[in-house]
Image 1 (spheres, rainbow, N blue to C red):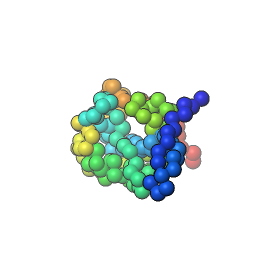
Image 2: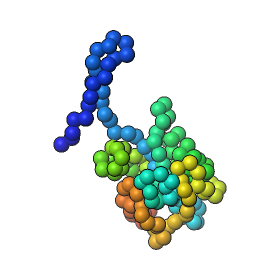
Image 3: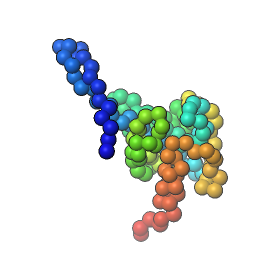
Length: 155
């Protein structure tokens, strides 16, 4: 069951009371593969603190794909080629601050990751060396990613 969280605001044109909807916030996360090295993760500069897949909010007027490329550049200073969409995650409790829905992309990174924007540091990890703690639902996302990577592609 969902909680009704709508409120009323005044229409700027006519002054009538109109219902204001509270909707989930769209975000994007990018699993950046570095050829032969592993995946790029960031240690967050802002709460919630911990390690995370690079990503962030989609700006108004921006496509999810544009946001993924922008966030990779902003957070870890990498140009990326988006390879495929992994999945969309929408559990209302995935981010304790507010209800977000994230679409996760797998991308190939070019260059050397450098922490920028919301990242305190950036690192390259593989399945056996993942740092802790992982924030949000990023442990689940990475489990799904590694599971998918182990499934052989059809001939």
